[in-house]
Amino acid sequence: MGKSIVVTSGKGGVGKTTAAANIGTGLAQIGRRVCLVDADIGLRNLDVVMGLENRIVYDLIDVVEGNCRIRSALIKDKRLENLFLLPAAQTREKDAVSPEQMQVLIEDLKKEFDYVLVDCPAGIEQGFKNAIAGADVAIIVTTPEVSAVRDADRIVGLLEASELYDPQLIINRIRPDMVRKGDMMTTEDIIDILAIKLLGIVPDDESIIVSTNRGEPSVLDKKSLSGQAFRNIVRRLEGASVPFLPIEERSVVKRLLRMFNNVSGRS
Amino acid sequence: MLEWLSRLFGATEQSKDKAKERLRLVLVHDRAVLSPGLLDALREEMIHVLSKYMEIDEKGLEVNLNRSDESVALVANIPVRRVKRKL
Ligand SMILES: Nc1ncnc2c1ncn2[C@@H]1O[C@H](COP(=O)(O)OP(=O)(O)OP(=O)(O)O)[C@@H](O)[C@H]1O
Ligand SMILES: [Mg+2]
Image (cartoon, rainbow over all chains, first blue to last red; front, side):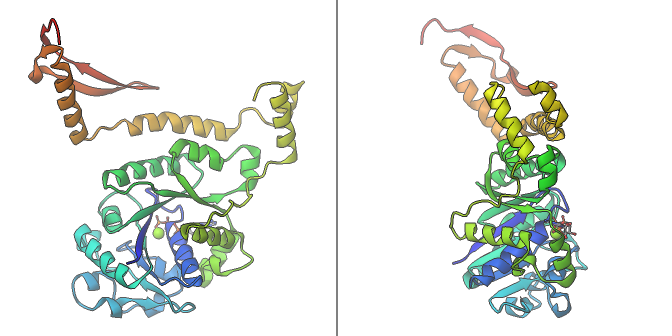
């Protein structure tokens, strides 16, 4: 029996789909059998991020409504043979599927796969409830901004209310230059506020845009910094303890100032 | 001297500190939501505990979360009929 993981955030556009695609691909790369499920009904995107948009025949709603078997709706990845995508329906509403149906679907997939990764839509309504319905654990994605962190906190509460405890956090789009200047909250700041476990930090990285253009997750790119961040996340999900990327290293001046401050007792 | 150094390198008034402070305050409010179920459970248990010490008017019991700018308080109004003399 595999494990189901929902990737969620509350706020839109913070990188859920990017994270799901990269983590799924990364897990498949190390040999796990992975199924990506796009639960963003009506606004599917995981297919294009994975570069599989031309292969879609059936979708999640077809499976739920019994128009086809799960097998025939699953799209095999171009690069990795143990990676599959169950695409969302594009022309249907979010209420075309219920949390109960999602739960059954995810349970079925867990029998076949080591990991079932569900890409959740933004918001906290029906689409969110559907996406978390069959999840064993949750990954929350946020960016280092007030609004995104606030929404992430709300999601922590809503997940708890649905008996999904101990979510893990990915902080996406960190900009070391801004962190250094004190114009972006640090990982410690955010963890301090949300009080949940950190799964990974992903830098703001042009290669994400390039790889999305190509339909090839950056985790496949050995030279990409964000790809490295996602590979680390994958290893942590597998239970390894991997140090976090040193993208927040303080500048020399800051370090000096800190020393001064410590000496003069201002902490 | 140190103050001056700090200012020179822009160590004072960092916008991320502002962000953190604002987040802290807004979350105090956001988090102060007791679901109806939890509120009912709290009310029941309060009645149970208080009844050991006094006779209270259960129907008149009010329990609420009150929010002000920087804090949230649990405010209870509990009409007492009679206080017991001993446990
Ligand atoms: N680390 C990053 N560096 C640079 N760009 C990024 C990064 N992460 C995500 N992006 C870009 O941000 C945009 C939104 O990302 P994505 O679609 O993954 O977010 P989402 O949370 O799934 O959005 P939605 O809520 O609409 O489903 C995309 O254009 C993506 O390429
Ligand atoms: Mg998305």
